Length: 82
Image (cartoon, rainbow, N blue to C red; front, top):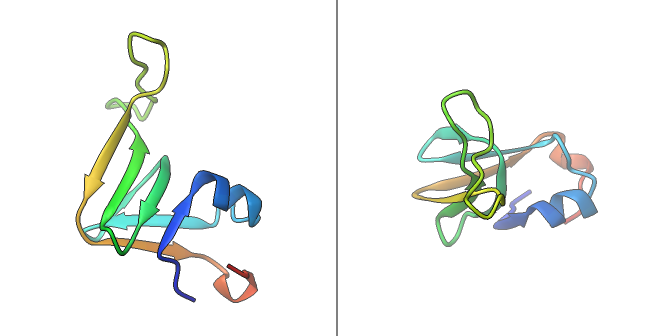
């Protein structure tokens, strides 16, 4: 199966919570809210050195855009219909 783009909403709607891994340039990244293999980017919540989500002055989570070779891997992909 080939997923080009996924958002956190797609993951929830398709029952993929906890089954999606995102890699940028071969390195696994976490807390992603959107990833696009074709466009080559992933948007993730920004975290501190302890893995906690960083909040901005407005008290909303900050995001970071990572660019490179993006791979979206879905565990048990044979059981998923996209």
